[in-house]
Amino acid sequence: MPDKFYTLITGASEGFGKALALECARRNMNLVLVALQGPELSFLEQFIKRNYSVDVVCIEKDLCRDDACCGVFCLVKKLGLQVNMLVNNAGLGSTVCFQDGSPLFYEKQIKLNVLATTVMTRHFLEMLKQNSPSHILNVGSMASFFCLPKKMVYAATKSFVYTFSRALRQEVKKDGVSVSVLCPGGMNTNLSLTLMIKSSNYFTRLTAMNPESAAPIALDGLLNKKEVIIPGRLNNCLLVVYKLLPGRVKTLLMRRAMKELNVENRFSQYLPQPLTILRCAQVA
Amino acid sequence: MKILITGASGYLGNKLAHSLANKGNQVSALVRSPSADKFLSHPNIHIVRGDVLEKESIVTAMKACDQVYHVAATVAPWIKDSNDYYKVNVDGTRNVLDAAVQTGIEKMVVTSTCGVLGPSLNEPLSENDPRLTAFKMDYELSKKMAEDIVFQYTRQGMKIVIVSPAKIYGPGNVSHSLTANAVIDEFIYQRKVFIPAPGTYKACFCYIDDVVNGHVLAMEKGRSGEKYILGGINLSYQEFFEEIRQLSSCRGRIIHASRNVLRAWAVFQWLNYKVTGTPPRFTLNALDIVWSNYIFNSEKACRELGYTITSLPEAINQTIHFLKNQKHA
Image (cartoon, rainbow over all chains, first blue to last red; front, top):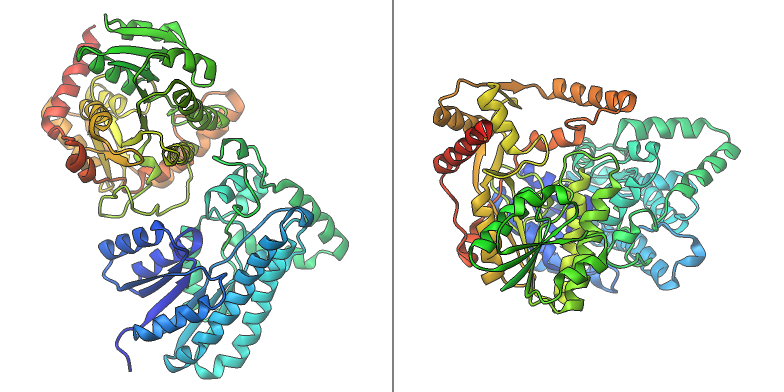
């Protein structure tokens, strides 16, 4: 039995991943942080090491690249790290009319949200079984419940994550691996999302959460082996009400809701560069 | 040396203008309205009428200047239209930077805030530490966006240094009601101060003269594209006011305010504003900031710039002295 277990979090340098990494550190969990290349990851590592007595290992990898997931797994193996929690958090969001998004962006989005989640889970499953009881947290979205215009690709990838997680859960339960899927609503994860939420209507602002308040909820749910975790009381209510509504009303509501959300909003003029589709919203 | 200062009518900009003028520099002070002119009477200070929102006026003011201190910002804890934070702090900064490129300014110092780094844990935060919470205050967010713009210009080769002061107090003209000075004044003369219960929350109190010096040092020695925290002494609110009580021999009471009561009060103030139009003194988001540690490490500025921090008793004595004189004036 290894004496040290690690929690692996992808997309850990920003937004929800960062909040989750900090929350795990606060709970004395050792961390393997995977994120894009850049100084932010090592700043986070240094901060955690200075403030908490946990072990932190950083892996700089762009999970959109071919073989990146395999690379992460091989490195973890090589370092002899025993992972007993896998958090597939890295993801790419977007709010744009389908026609306006570039084909390359959609490719990247699907690669990250769908492929990376699947492949990472596949690579680590054996290790997780060995280290049971262990956990997998896949970060989906409330968008996976709705058919949202302007977010069709994003919502579809998150639906994949949702279905994938729930099905996998049934299969690996007997091996002591618990799979949970997190379905948060809008979160103030990065600058452009924060600004988009700020410029939207009162209701959207009310349902939006900060990553630092969603992270403890996610972690509690994960450790309690909850199947679907939806942070925020209001979001939970919203979902119940939504499920009761007739189909035609749903469509109408979604269309209205999405009119509000624009990457080009009243704050766009203040941003360094005009927002391009590739820069927009790295949602959890 | 010919130097332009934006925001020269404000608390910090004013002190900086006088400090630079006293050193024999020719200081141009960019000022919007004549009401603040009386604070800028000095043989070496020339008042230039202008606004950071009007780029032409900045370009005119900058001509023949070697250095620029961009201090101007909207800092009030509450303003009627929150868009103004973004207009002044983000667009204003961009205008000043553009003008500096146009006029070939040699080096700039831009004043930001420790608020961009956000709340801390028990250890003081440094320049590179990750932000622990999402941005809740428009002010902090707008300053963060301004910093991003500055870094964009430094990457293109412009020489700009960012300085981030924390909670500033000490002699100077007070612009709004929740500055540390105003609270200290109320404590001494109305003998009461409300601090967040249980009183152990810490803040970084920095003395105005240190911050002014820090700006000048940043211009002299600061590396372009770098950010320097100009902090002070990290202390709990309880300890800070106990120190003032001791030094001023006043008998002010330190009242531990409950968070929920103040939250209710903030909601009430907001409703009151909606009905009567009276501006609120504080908002719910501002409370979150007081109910967390906000402490910072000035080690980088001390090491690289030679930044010094005045001892607490001396700084407080100077402040008390100033507040007393102001009462008699």
